[in-house]
Length: 162
Image 1 (tube, helix red, strand yellow):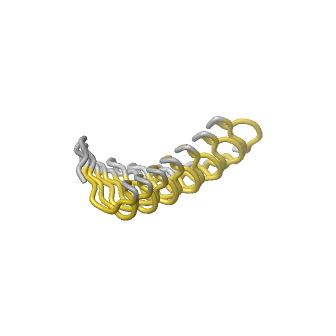
Image 2 (cartoon, helix red, strand yellow; image 1 turned 90 degrees about the vertical axis):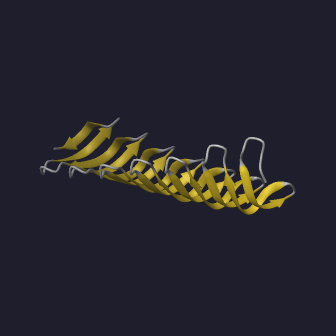
């Protein structure tokens, strides 16, 4: 089926809505191949942007939701849980420069318990709030220095030992 806006869909329909396996080519060249329900991506599917970015995983109501893998155009990647198209739950993000975070996410921000391993050899293990170390944690520098204690808003704060 070809839509007025140039979008093309090949697959199954139910009650005039996309339902079941299908392939959609959007007017901008992006594609989705996978499961549909009630006219939206739902279940497992692969979305590819024309710039090379991809998401392969679970969908709900047309949004990334469940487990999935995203690869960005600059070498970044994320494998883990998604809610409403945002990294949310447990996941691993690897940046192009080799930095790696493994732990809990909320609304695309590090939030909860996690471990950052930086490409320069530094390591942070501890709690995050809204993307920054907050609460108990341990930061070890590649030169052997170590801080164990509390953080607030990304800074050493409160009781600690260096």
